Length: 411
Image 1 (cartoon, rainbow, N blue to C red):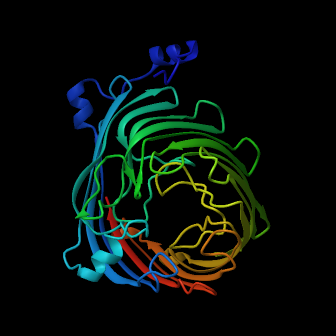
Image 2: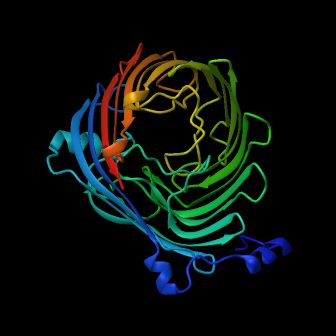
């Protein structure tokens, strides 16, 4: 598989590069370790589970874990990295296991799974401002991403390329053929394989360009595709534009997004989604309004992983985006208390479902309260977030309540 063709400029850059370590032993000695200790508490109350006629899901879980990553210093522009994650739920009961570990398709196989997994094992090479990485790795791209919302961070096995050689531009590409999710659905931590959130995962690839050449403007364009034998594969094209300005003491933002999902199977309707967002801020207070519409069936937020951007502008805090055919709007307001580095916020999202059974004619009101802080000074590295979300439906009574607390210490 041809992944990269070296240009004359690239070869010259290789010949003039400076090497950080003088020897291979020095590269390992001068490597860097990053770690995180985590303690999460989640509480779930879903009135009818995952369907309008299903069984209620109620339970809570305390999850404890460690995330540890090591990367060598550069040696002839090469680096090697490894990363481990662990998870343990010492006090979980039957209800907690059901709510957070054994319900396929519910978004519930996400917390109960004890063990240790080698999430990163890669070799990278730098050419100018371009990094090529092969092996197990976390990825942060618009259409392929590692979700940080659960205790275990998703990882991928494949090849990625990130380049900043073009001024004000980041070009990224990735091809992945194995995936490590949150849990295996049977009480163990997930390992690498062909299962991605309950679906058989063959491979996925994506390409993205993020450009900031225009003053205060960020433009993103991305294309990706997923091949999955357990359901219809699809291609996803996405663009968005964000403008961030300032007028006296006020800051303001204006943004627009568009996505097109093209399914491989003719039995599945292709879908479009688009959104618009406008916000304003002053003296630590920020607020925005957003509108989004998903047309002609179900859309997707990416091609691999759950940490993908684009999240639709009307996404909620806990349950993230609603990608069924619908019209949506959102209002968010938050305030930063600077001496405490504490953000307090609230969000309201209204979803008007259209053509997807059993949600036809249904409407949902989703209210979220959230807070978060990252401490400084003698407690630097210690942080916490808390979020509560209440989702109420008019027709199907598929109401949901969920509380998340996430505490961590990074070092």
